[in-house]
Image (cartoon, rainbow, N blue to C red; front, side, top):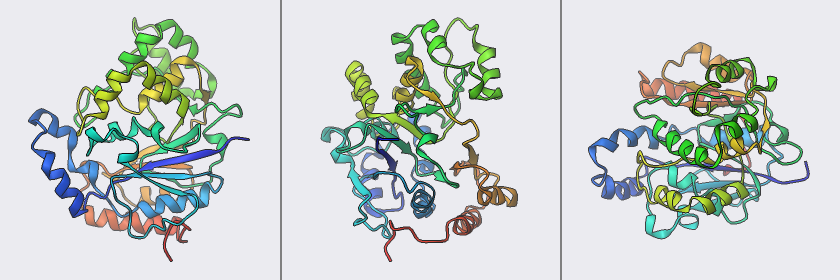
Length: 334
């Protein structure tokens, strides 16, 4: 491919006393109905972030730049002189009057404001690990379109979930694209989507309305120009999300920009076996073996809400990552 691809990752050290003090100044402004959306889990740091960088260096050495988006923080072990690394503070991408923010939604909605960001980039949450080699073609087509696997799928309302954001995203999508346009452009019945996704889409294709899109919870290949376009069309709504200091039911999220690619047909179909979503809630020997096996190229490992013995699970998690990625990366200080 003859175009650069950047990676963008967001990170917060929830144990940082300076950051916690700043957050505590605003905690009281969150009403009771919204506190469940802003649990401490969202800010928990398991000490595994260096393995994210090790995975990038080992399994995606072709990446152009790595943009680390933080709130005036950086890991103690990070070598900021690395030529591929660019640290981006929230102040550089979000309107100052909205800061500080303690929600991913305003941060992720403003990634297109990163100075120097390539047109094609891949956004990672810090729990999305590369666990086997990936290539540019896993994320983008030869002509630069992002690759996704998707399906028609209902939005599931869950406590601590993303249902509110997805509804808001889809409200925007369906105001620009008709049901027939989405069915035509979405490529939902292409065999490359995989049998499970095709079955999902068949179940919901006769619905009167587009009920939502299935989400893989894997890294998001995106186009900067698409984010710019959606901002141009829906500035008021995206400004409202940007001003949400904490997660708010009225927010949109980063999936809006992915959904736009799908609804407009400006995407290519990816590999349905590229990766998967996993939880540490019930992590045991089978899961640790799977993580170390290389079966999946990408694993999103959610720390869950019901980890029984956090200290033991954290120890086993780090031990397994150390087996998979034992060598320090050039992103780490010697």
